[in-house]
Image: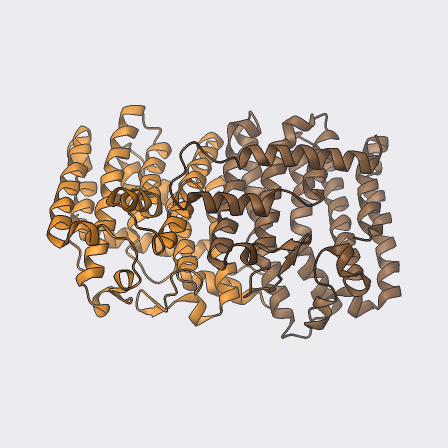
Length: 297
Length: 297
């Protein structure tokens, strides 16, 4: 199966399973409908599901079936979706458009956006710790620990705090890279680490995947910054050139467009090199790195 | 040791351990200081630490030392503190004062308040899933699952959503009780359930503690509503009569002050009755129920 077909198929499987996990319960008290609806609005009906794809493909390297990695992949996507909802809030990035639709606080209201983000984050840990996710409680506890570290105050949340403060500070290219490693990279790293944990991978395999995920995350962010600098709103489904306008730190601003493109090609090569130990089995992940570097939307 | 002395001693132990868990890391990137500082502002230096007390005392019923329950207690307190930070936000309850100090979004800013709440919630799961919390990964995974359910979209988060929508709906006393069971009761129930899980309690003991926690949670909320109706800002350290003024649903409004006081006495008796199977060992928890019913602040 080609990469794009596989990516689409995985996105469909994730959408189905997320829909089940977010299905309304039997008894919905008054007011309860809206919270669940808001969570479904945030988590369903969009997105390439790149993080779940990486998780599932990483688990496959160690012989895991997609079905056995799907719940962990959905938990990860819940964290990603929560982060988008909170980042879009007026007090944060103040975005009104996401994936071509009004952002959650616009479609509902701010309180519902804050609460449904909180609830999606919490749901991620509920999913990861549930017996359905893995038979072995030691692996479930490990997944929870890894995701909490990736998303928390030394990971993604810190990255977002740094990103907000970048508007008031003169960030060096190194500072920007560090901020992006935390803000965007931490969840990509978790994607691959979680796949390895599910498949009980040994240390060398985990290290190889970690190197891949590091390069992948940087490539993703750099491509995103390049799109932001040159893209158009129609293709991206969100407001563009906004980061630059707000004085937000990007590597494109620091390196220039040509420098950024050269750096991007280097990162893809780095990702490919990291996967050498897996031979042909790593092909889907190599394609994923190329895909994010070349994407136009 | 008397109840009040024990409550104070536990609060001190929780404060110390939370301080360690929230200690700044070795390398703090620019902007990172503020997020950690905000989390410490939210979690340290105040509060009776009632939930950790219940958790530790519940674990003691089954022979667990305080030291072996302290990390789980701190994780629970992180969730409680996150909920206060987010509930206080302008888009939610819009409170400027908490425990006699400016609320987090006033002392820092809204973005930092949203992010540090997110990070405290995430930290709770990091703590619960860490090997230091319990030797047995099955118990760690169980604690994560229970806390996520208690705090999430069918628990505390739903309760807060219902509370917000209560302003626009005509809630019956039953609706109010249900909302409070979710918003306040869920974490109290977790307190006792987590203590039982740490101590590997059998089903009858868990059921007894669950009944106790249910009555305790209702008593706590009712006493809070009575204080809100009659208290003063100095004693409570927060704005009073605000819930009623905003048309928020309370049982005091539905039952009247005398009816509410009679109901409160019944709840304390219920809590005491539920602990009968534990004999003298349950005394601290009985005292805790009396304490929350009689508190003036």
